[in-house]
Image (tube, rainbow, N blue to C red; front, top):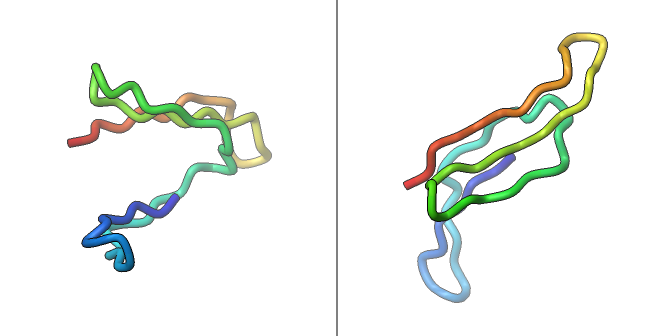
Amino acid sequence: MSVYHQDDPDHYMLLTQFGTNGGKTSTLDASLRKFYIAHTKTAEDNAALQVYSVS
């Protein structure tokens, strides 16, 4: 996952990148200021829900 800041309509700045363990389904709950990513079981990891706080 890559997180960008929009400086203006034509310019973006990369803020951070992080792994999602193959997760492709996500949602943002703006009222709770949480970002959720679900991923399925893999050979390396069990199925899980990653939860991130957003500002």
